[in-house]
Length: 349
Image (cartoon, rainbow, N blue to C red):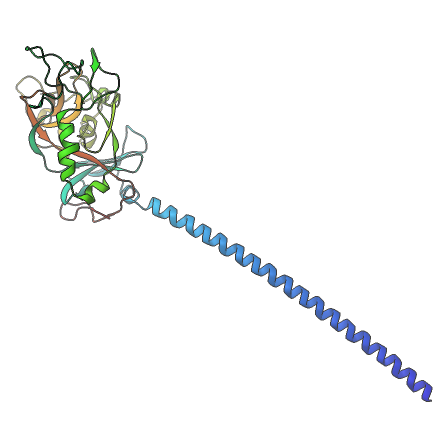
C-alpha cells in the first residue's frame, strides 16, 4: 500500500512540474508577443509622427508660399463688370479692368493702383497721382550726346541731347529703320531709380522687386495687336519704370476697345468720344502721361497717353515735359489686408 502511495505522489508531482513548465513557457511566449507588439507599436508611432511632422511642415511651407497677395487676389476674378480678369493675351497673368475696380493699394503711405498680377506672383502697381511735368531725356546735363550714343539723331548744331530709349542697351538698339548704340539711361530713368527711389521709405524699398520692364519700340498709327507684338522686344531690369501702352489698352473694360483699336491722336478736330479705350479705364487721366515705349518712326519721340485718351508723340528732347506716373513691382511674398477700395485700400503686411 505504501508503494502505491509513493508512486501516486511521484506521478502527481511530475504532472505538476509539467504544468508549471508549460505555464512558464506560455507566459514567456506571451511576454515575447507583448514586447514585440510594443516595439512594433512604438516604431509605427514614431514613423507616423515623423511623417505627420514632415507633412505638417510641407503643408505649412506650402501654405506660406501660396497664401500671398496673388493667391488672395486671384480668388476675386470676375467675368463681367469692373475687377480682376484673366489676361486674355498673356498666360498666367491677371489684369484689372474698368472705371473703378477695387485695386487701390497703399504703398509708401500713398495711394497706388494694382495694374496686374504677373506670372511670378509679383504685383505691378502704378502711382494713383501724377507728378511733373518732367523731361524724358535731354536735361541740362546733356546725358546722351550723339558721340556716345550713335542711335540718337543729331540736332542742327551737330549734337543730340536726347533719344527715346529708356535705358542703356548691350549692342545696338534697333527701332524699325533706326539702329545704334545706347550707352546711358534716359534722364527720367536716372531720376526715378535714383533720387525718387531714395526718397521712398525703407519699408517701401524693401517691398520692391527688381523686375523686367518692356521697352520695345512701337509702330505709329496701328492696332492694339501691333502694340502687343512689339513692346517686349527689348527688356530692361530695374526698380521704377512707367506703364506700357499695352497696360493702357488692357485696363479698359469698354466692349468697343478691342485688339483692332487704333486710338491714335489725329492732327486736329477730335475729342475724347473718338477713343473707345479711354472709357471704362481707371488709368485714364485728363493730362498727358509718359509710357515706356518709343515711337518706331523716330529716335526722339516717345509714345504718350494724351489728355483726350488718345495715343500720340511726345518729344524726349530737353524742351518737352510730360506728366509722370511711376510703376514698380511688389515682391511675391507680401500679404494684403483691406478690400481695395479708395477708402479701405489694400495694406501690405
